[in-house]
Length: 126
Image (tube, rainbow, N blue to C red; front, side, top):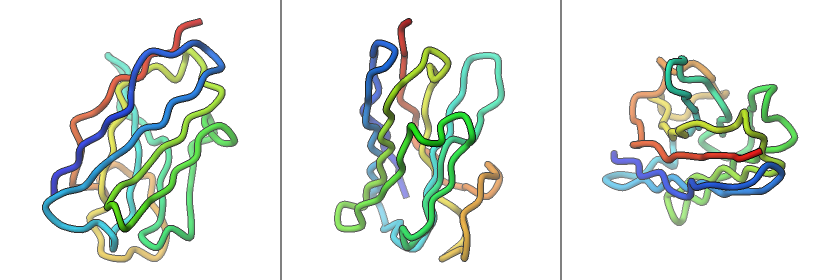
């Protein structure tokens, strides 16, 4: 499966962006999907994940209440709506697909994701 992330850009603090992650090659309907982010010189960190069925979501404490992950199975696409952006949200954002088929929960562990998109840059100015 190939994952294509898009929607990043430059935004002022307090603004919003919506990231998209389009899957091709095969469906990801039966796999949880996650968003991660990375700042140069730092480890990649978990941001949000959504269960394969879309019924459960999980967020990092740093984005809870501001970011919303969702999925559109008809479009084979996952979204990350980011509101009230802060300068500390500046990073390259990556989407990824869970390696397990229909995992019963969602996981924030990077090792559990085996397909990754190329990343999209989000820059929040103060």
